[in-house]
Every structure is written in C-alpha cells, then in structure tokens.
Length: 298
Image (cartoon, rainbow, N blue to C red):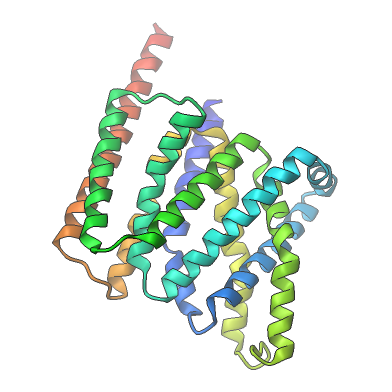
C-alpha cells in the first residue's frame, strides 16, 4: 500500500506539472479555432489510448468494462464533463485568459476538498484546515483583484472537481476509463472535423505540417497526464489530490506572466498565500506520517 501511495503521489506530481505547462502547447496552435483543437484532442486521445491498450493486450478487459451498464453510465457523464472542461480551457488560453484559467485551477483544489468532506466523509486535521483557510483567503483575494466575476475560473474549477469525484467513486482503471470516455465523444469530434474539411472551412492539407503534428500530438499530451490523474485519484484522498493540484495553476500563472498578462501586487499577495497553504499542508502531512511510523515501530 505504501509503494502504491508513493506511485500515486509521483503520478499526481507529473500530471500537474504537465498540465501546468500545457498553455504553451495550445498557444502554438492558437491560429486553429478552439472547437477544432478540441475535436482533434478528443479524436487523437482515443486513438492513442486504444493503440496503447491493444499493445498491452488489454482489449478484452476494455470490452468487458465498457459492457458494464453502471460503468458506462458513469463514464458517459464524465466524458461530457471533461470534454466541456477541455473546450473551455483551450478557448480561454488562446483568447488570452491564461491568468483566469490559472485561478480556476487554484479554486479547484478547494472544490475537491469540499467534495471529499461532503460526499466521501473525509476529515481534515487542524493543520489541513489551516492550510485550506489560507488557500481560500488567497483565492478570494485573487478573485477580488480581477475586478469581475471569474466565470471561466468557476466553471473550470467545478467541472474538474466533479470529474475527479465521479472517477474516484467509479474506481475504473485509469487508461481504460479514459479510453471509453474519449470513445463516447469521438464520433462527434470526427464528424465535425470531416464537416469542416469538406465544407472548406478548414484545410488540413494546406495548414502546414508543424500544425498537423501538433494537432495529432494533442492525443498523447492529453491522455498521459489525465491517465496519471485518474490513477492517482483512485489511490489518494481527494484532500491530498486537491492540495497537490496547486502545482498546476502555479505553472499556468507563470505562463500568463510570460505571455504578458497583468501581474501586480494583488496577484503576488494571493500567490504567496496559496503557496504558504501548500507548504503548511505538506509539512503537516509529513509530521503526521512520521508520528504514525514511530508508533508502528514502538
């Protein structure tokens, strides 16, 4: 169990780092409409995952999982949620709202912790409560500093928090679950791509090989971190996943600064509060595990 938890933590760290630098990838193809990028993201994620499972000899396991009615219902719901989340995020990044997107993923851990307490009856220790309150203060101040309701942020936070909760409740194998999710949406995505191609609204032949390769690469760049997330969410508490997730929006925040979005004193204050909360949470977890290990040895 300890080895599994370590792998889950490492998976979460890798996942959130990859997600944090993802705005750079979408900016490279910002000349392509967001809806078209989304369709390629869904299509090539499904292809990449199907090939991966085929090579691993897990085709029959995938089919068995897909035929389970309860599983199919859950994954159909999560497929809609995650697709809408992807679409919103791609549009926001390429429309110049990287900062607001980062705020959404700062809020999301708070949503995950709240959902863990409400639906999974997870309890927080004093240090964790302090970290949560400090993070909430940072996010609230960050929201106030924007000067407007952060609708993009709120949707990204709630949609991804709901996705994480449902995937944890389902407990399906990460790669298989994601394969079924993307397969549900693939017919719509492929249909839109073909319609755009035949109507002349999009021309993949003349769009340029660098862009074509980046669109194809949207598959693995999506599938790998999301599979890591699904694996980690299955083995870690939502509260732990939520606090580790602050890594991702921090990288997004830095990307926003790099691309020239506003970075003033209010953002610095909020940023400091959030990272202080992460430091408190990690330290509290480490001290608790150390005390427990001493009791076991004794």
